[in-house]
Image (cartoon, rainbow, N blue to C red; front, side, top):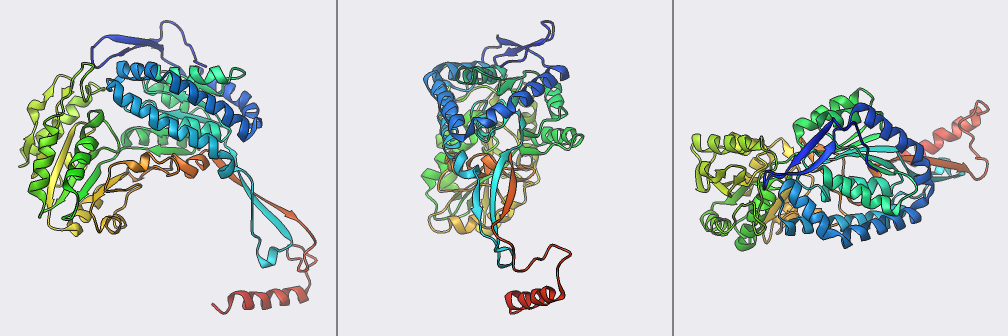
Length: 494
């Protein structure tokens, strides 16, 4: 279901590739948000009462629609944010895998299960289950407008919640498309509603009294979301920015590492929170690796046509951020071995590789979110670990080492690691995804992602009267003595 507002309160979506209007949508007000939340509460009980199996059947049917109409959805994504159609199809493929996992595994992960009692509570049968929080508000990003929000939408729905979704104002049509597709298989009630709009619409959702907010976006915006949610003590799931590193040890596969660095740094025009922005390379293989990266990156061109490998920068204001990071790196002694200031042509940015960049440059410390990366020589892996951990972000990490990859990974504070590959942890449906530090908290995907939109409920049922009635004023001195003896026997020997 799509919330509509007064006709005069509309906004246009401008294609970054053509500069043309590709859609017009309502700018949702606080009243629109409140109405959507009210409707979501009215139908939450119905959706929850369907049970895991019926919800799974509906979500599987939703996935079927997405798969059958994938070219249409990919085209819409291309029009709204400039992503190449083939990359949009890849996004749909990954999102479908996670949607399938959530539908299939919700009952196993969230359903009631027995837990063991202790010796003192042997007369009790104990169980735990995970119940839906109620109404979930989701604030989605524009850079992966299918894959990323579905990590919250599908998991929240599978857990039994209803959802009010505010997509990015740069890709509202994708959010509307997804909700309309679900309404075809859940025609009875609006279990997923979309309210389009800008930042004020998202702020209204934060203050609307929903039972949880799932947010994906920049760290700066995430702090504003948390501030607004604090007014109503609304819990939040924060998927924020990153400054991910790729580490290459002396024994790493240089061809594979260079290929991963180029894709991780430049795909989606670098507009990826899990993108490779920093590369730390052992000094023994630095020159050979740098040659490989530059050779591969030279073949990648940003463009607005249908055959472009990477598209334009979606947010016009972000061009200034990318330019500032490149200029600061070069102004402080760094060198552009590919690209540089001249790589910026309107809203197109060609791949840029910077070396000899000081570690306190903003190109190293701040999220760039563009097709640039710094490549830095390190004396050993201890040096690489220290530099990687110096960031306030901790989202993803890639390590290329034939012998020491997992050992190096254990020393780095980050939410996810791929050893000898890039970002594959995000493709495995059973794995959780999320960060630490300024990259946020909470998890999507996997069992953790399902539990994120629930609360745990513990239950005990007395099977027979206890021979040691403890929680009663009828407790006798003899029982108190037995308790002291039991405590000593059970725990005193440790």
